[in-house]
Length: 322
Image (cartoon, rainbow, N blue to C red; front, side, top):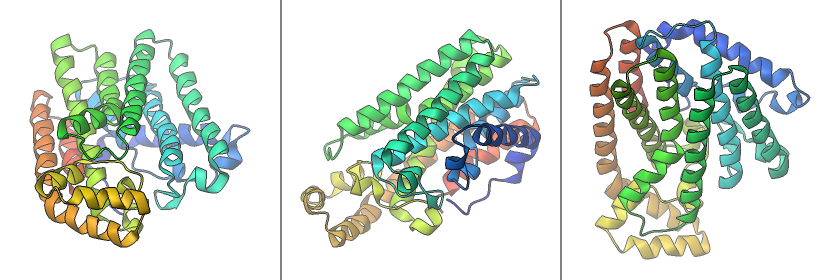
């Protein structure tokens, strides 16, 4: 949630890398003709979870190079670009407690600002002269896009299964955490079989992050969440708590369809209460299992402050629901 602080154990081992990356990010946003658009935007804040995960995992694997911060910045730029585009698609007027770009500048300008960050990502990646990095970036970027399209194609699909939901979030959110894991494995030159374990770890952390985000959408208030709540249902995005609630109480399907047709806020509040009652606990249990599986995979890493940081980061992601 917006007010939650990342555990010190997670940030401390890579504090210098996070600081270096932050300076580089602000430099990109300020040294452009578009700099005025990025002033006092949500891009100045954020927990930088993806680069943090990458730095900790790279440290655990013994990766040490002077430009490691650049690789973390690639993740953050790609993520920021996707957030701007997501807010346009979702008609969101808030992000991290601040006005979204589409709210401030309109959809057309926001599209181009998101595109600018996408090109900044590619430019930085090209500067590394690393063909494997470009291959990974394009593979995962494509998966992110396909996941977003798959979600849009299932707009208001109240028959969406848990498995289909899992596939969507694995692609649209898990892909970027998978990219972080693959980049760490690539830079550390790990053996292929170990790389598979790291890829599973990255995917699990990404799934956990999205699961918790979907739970917060029905349990939080907009002030603490930093963006509108119940936005998924408003926009017709079907998430796991709703899927599970509909399975337990099929009569809710007609109520959800009625809300989609007339947008009645009273109906929305009723649905929120029912989804909390019927779908929240089981969704939390599933998220907990995902977190436990991810933490079990950490045992394959050397016992260092970096692993300790990862061990603190994963519960933090889950505890955002508290």
